[in-house]
Amino acid sequence: MEVVYITHPACLEHLAGSGHPERPERLRAFEAGINASGVSAKRLASEVAEQKWIEAVHDAVYLDNLRDFSQTGGGIVDSDTWVDSSTWEAALRAAGAAGMALREGAEIALLGVRPPGHHALRRRAMGFCFLNNIAVATAEIRDRGEKVAIVDWDVHHGNGTQVAVADDPGTLYVSLHQSPFYPLTGLLSETGANGTTVNLPFPAGTGGDVYRQAFARLVGPIVRQFEPDYILISAGFDAHVDDPLADLSLDSADYGFMAKKVRQAAPSAPVIVFLEGGYDLAAIETSAAAMVRGLVDDWNEPTGVLRTSPPEAFTVVEEAEQIFSTFWRL
Image (cartoon, rainbow, N blue to C red; front, top):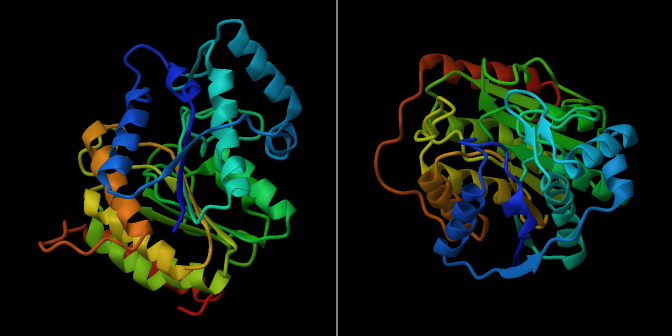
C-alpha cells in the first residue's frame, strides 16, 4: 500500500497572529503523529494549485484581492482570521497538495498543509481559512466524472465545503460537528441533492460511544451505498477532549476507529486526508497516529470504557436515521 505525505515549508511560514491557536507547531505535531504511526510514507513537496481549479471554487476578484492583501503585508480579515506576507503562497501550496496526490496515484495521501480550508467561502475568508482546499480537490475530481465522498470530522461544521458541493449529486458531504457552535451552520435538516448532505450536529460532551453509533448506523452505510471513487477527509482533531477551543469528548483512539470505518466503507477508493483544525499539540500527534493506523488497517479497538455522551447526542443519531432512511438503506 503506497502512502504519501505531502507538505511544503511555506505552510509553516504563514502566521495567523501573535498567540493565535492556528500556529505552525500544529503542522509539526501532525507530522510527528504520522511518524509515530510506524507507517512508511513517501514525502513530497506540494506544488501551487492550478488556477482553474481554484477558480472553480473561488471568485477571481476575491483571489486577486487576497493575493494583493498578502503581498502588501496583510492584516486582519476578521477577529479570527489574519493574513501576513506568507499567507498567499501557503494557501496556494495547501490547495495544490491534493492535485499532487491525484497525479501521484497513491492509495493514501496525507496532506500536512495549513492554512486549513473548510470554512472558506467563494468570496470570503473566515475561520482561519482562505482557500477551500478540499473543495478545490473535489472540483478537479468531479471534472473527471468521478464521485467524491467527503467526511468532515472537524469539531466545526465545514460551511464552506457544504456550500461548494451541496447541489452536486456526485459529491457526498458528511459532517460530524458540535452544535450549537461556530459557524452556526450544519443543521440536521439540510440534506443536499438527494440526501448527499449529511449533518450530524452533536451537543457538547459527545464522545466516542455516540460516534461509533453514528458510523455504524449512518456514515458507514451511506458512504458504502454512495460508492465513491475517492474519499476526502477533513481531518480536524479539535473534537478531542483535550482541545482548548471546543467541548466534544473524543479520545485519540476514536480517530483510529473513524478512519478504519471510512476505509472499510469504500476499500477500493483512494483516500486523501486534509489537516483542518485541532489546537492541542499532543492530541493532534496521538490522534493523527491512530488515524493513519486506521487507514492502513493496523488499528485495533483498545480495551476500556468509552466516554459517556449526554442522552441528547443519541437522539441526534436516531433523528438522522429517520431523515436519511428516505434516501438510503439504513
